[in-house]
Image (cartoon, rainbow, N blue to C red):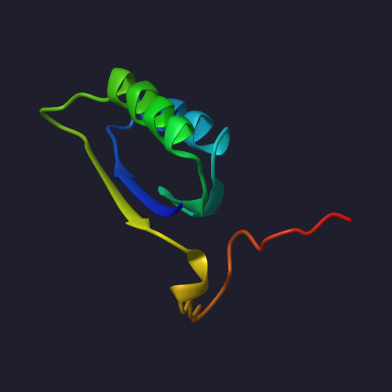
Length: 87
């Protein structure tokens, strides 16, 4: 599955959230990640982030799409983290 993940964590928890998300997804811009992920890894990611967040102050939004071919992504302005392809 393909997901877009957006978080808004308190200042003292942002770095931990960033490090956790980078293990599973591609960083797009501040607090936004996207990419293919298995159901098992998504479950792990949710648990890890859930353990790092303060549920009274922080928020986490995950958009789930069945396939990334149905996504039309338009970037206006500077693209902060261009995808890299290795062969």
